[in-house]
Length: 360
View (cartoon, rainbow, N blue to C red):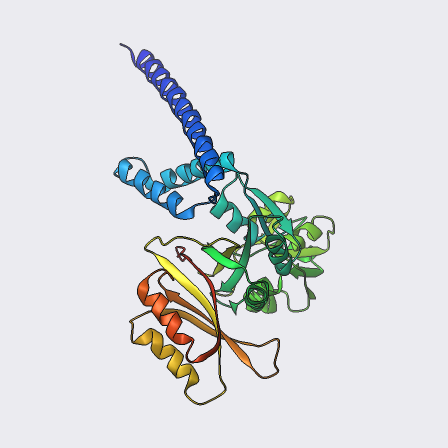
C-alpha cells in the first residue's frame, strides 16, 4: 500500500471515530436529560458541582495520561456543562460588559453552555441572584496584590446568600486604543483595581495623562472603541471583542497577579474532600474575645487561610470579621468549632462551604 493510500485509510478511520464520538455524545446528553427529569420529580438541584468533579476525576483516571490531560480536562468540562444545560439552562450574572475578568471567570467555571448575564455593578450581581432572576453570580472577592474587594464582602453579609464555589484567574492588564499608538492617548480609563495594579507603570510612562475610573475594564474598552483619544486598561479578550489595538502588554506592576472569584447562589454544596468554609462573625468589645475565637480553630488543628476585619454598617467603630478555613461544615471538627464560637461571638454567619479552587 502506498503512503498516499495509507494516509487516505487513516483519514477514513478518523472519520469513523469522529462519527462514533458524536453518536456517544448524543447518547450521553439523552441520558443527562433523563436524569434531569428524575431530579425534577425528586425536587433536587440540577447543579451538582460535587458530582461533576467526581465525573471529571474519573475520566482523567480512565485516560492514564495517553491523551494530553489539560486538553482532555477542557474538552470534558465543556461536555459535562453542555449536558447539565440540557437538564436545565443555568443563568449566571457577572460584572459586565463582556470581556471583563468576571466574564472570563464565569466562562471558565460554567462553560459556554450557560446563559451569562452582564450587569453594571457587583451589587447588581447580588440583586439578580437574590431575586432569583439568575441561578448564580460571579463576583471578585480578593486580588493577590490589592487585597479584598470590600463591596463583595459587604454585600455577601447584607444579602445573606451562600458561597457555592471559587475560581482563581490570572490577571494581566494591557493598554489599548483604536490606533495602537501611545501618543494618541489623551485620557486613560479602567476599573479602580486595574488602575491600582498598574500605578507605577502609568506614573513612569504616562505621568501627565489624566486617569478616570469606570465600573469595569471592559466598559473602559467599550468606551475606547468609540473615542479615539481614550486608552483603556483591559484584557486581551476585551481588545479582540471591541476591535482595539494593543499599545502595551502586561503593564501590571507585579507579575503573577491573580484574582479570586466567588460563585454565589442560594444552594449549599456537599463535601468534596477538598473544601473551604467562609464565615463572618463579630465579638464583644472586651480583651481576649478574638483570641478565644481563634483558639477554637487552633486546638482542633483547623487551618485559617484568611481573616479580615470590616467596619460594621450598623454601629460606628464596631467591626465584623471575615474568615476562611480549610474544611466543610459537615465535617465534625468544623461543625463543633463553629458551635463553640457561639460562646464568644455576638454573631456567627456561615457564608458557605465549597470546593477550593486551584490558585494561580
